[in-house]
Length: 342
Image 1: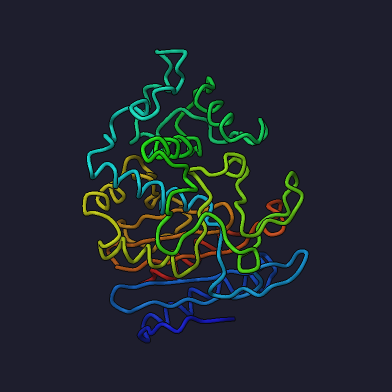
Image 2 (image 1 turned 120 degrees about the vertical axis):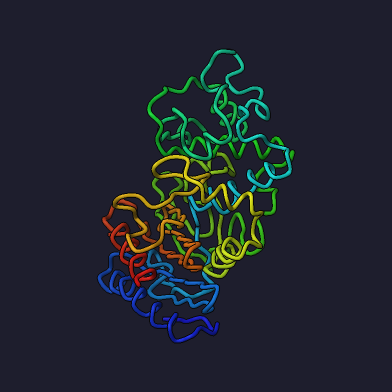
């Protein structure tokens, strides 16, 4: 195991020890290869610790605090939501305007298509009729053609569900607005769109890329699009905790943006983020003023504004395969409950 060198008072140290225990057990039981737990508290400092392996197939590497993680859907909140709300602050984006203000070619052959009516706010809150899952990568590897396919496809409408397509489209909007591809945009201090494979947590032994992925995006659709608003961000425990601290102390976003990411849009969601609900992955002991998000690769971030405390759990739970019960839901709930337990 490796610990950070940051100072923290005894109270936070005790919280950290009890919250780290479920992660240690998950690694010992071989449910996950390894992970890093990090906590930042505005009053009491921060702590982080790594345990287990960053890779076990085909070679073995230890997990350390400087390991880069494929953050998966944490991209939605750390990068895409933050950028969209920044442009909203500046008056460049009207959250209640349709996406066609920046994507006029969305379903351009049918002026009455429902896709042309969806708004930025609806996409941020996953309040659109898009399907939850779509294997876009199976339609080819040309990123420009795939973008055209997504924009022109007649999507089957259904009840609002959590859908990557919402954030894929928000990513397209950012590309049009900035006149740059997402991978040409600076993702922010401490983050990147790829990482050194030897200093990254390995993800899956991919069945169609025919290699163990490390330092390159795991998400199939993001890989085929060569950058997307729903996945693709890499970071370390330090960069994730720095981001969380910026949300807690107000230096990472405007007051207006932070108010939006805290304000419920539905019984589960805010602008980009989730808030507590029954059987939430974040547990039951955090305050109502908590937001959070998870990533498919085994990452998560919880930010409790009332407590002034955030926790990130970064794991490689899909290495070497996603087709295994890692127990990640129970692990996340256990960690969340112990971090915010009175």
